[in-house]
Image (cartoon, rainbow, N blue to C red; front, side, top):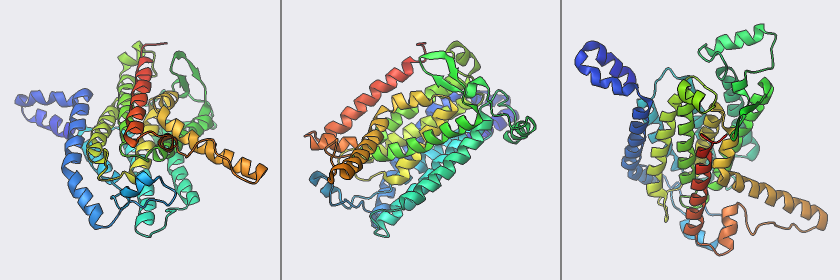
Length: 392
């Protein structure tokens, strides 16, 4: 919005030429991060008081670790603070004509609405299970598939066309299931290789990345500050890739697919990082507020969608290795327990407790040790991801 205001003021007087700085994505990204950070820090106490007055305290289950019982009653659904500061900052600083930012915003808010409903049922309706798993999965699938079907016509060689025009072109072609190379699966360390996906493959991959990342971040959100800092780091790195992918010169030099308009996602990524750091101010140990599903599902959906747009799905799995490990630990634990129960009559466990961070707590690590060490691992993985900009 501010970029349009700056352009309008420049037309009124040559003395407003200094406002040309608003045209630079790097400037607007820095300002978006600062704006989201300041909004979050300013609104944080009010949000926490509001959640506390509504008695939206986090329920602690009976099988939780003893050290976590003291957290009972800490206000949850604090993800609304992240969504509020991130959305306002993004709306202020990005170019409203950019369709990529709009779709990421809509996916983020859509998953946030699912998380809000789940949290509300847990803490207000006193339903420990919250939203039924099938209902949650169906809503996630609906948003993920809609986003995938939209993006399949955005990421193409003719990305300057309107999506509806691309759709009719596809119909006229007899529903050609092939896609241009830039919509293929990119291999980070072998940039000249792109595995062709086709329309159906692209839709399936996009759906799995968005829904899978959303749930993986949600599973990671179990300790004070554990999920938010990796989200900030991975989101910031994806912002770098968005900027390079959206710039024709950088994309050609770095052997990246050029996705026209993807650079504007840098503003969203910066706002997400700023909002995340503001939330961490209140979520660091001992937490004054928890993110809840409203924040975790939304942020996971956001970074998954951005990774698809900039064609870095594999790189997301590398940089978000902590999220992957947390999700895999749950799947392995549940599968092995059911298998051994069916075979031996008694379920056995691979880990002392799932998700993975609870296993390390059971092994004697302090909560802060688990959190900081997972942060360090994520930082290392993000550096590996950034190194692929030049390695090939």
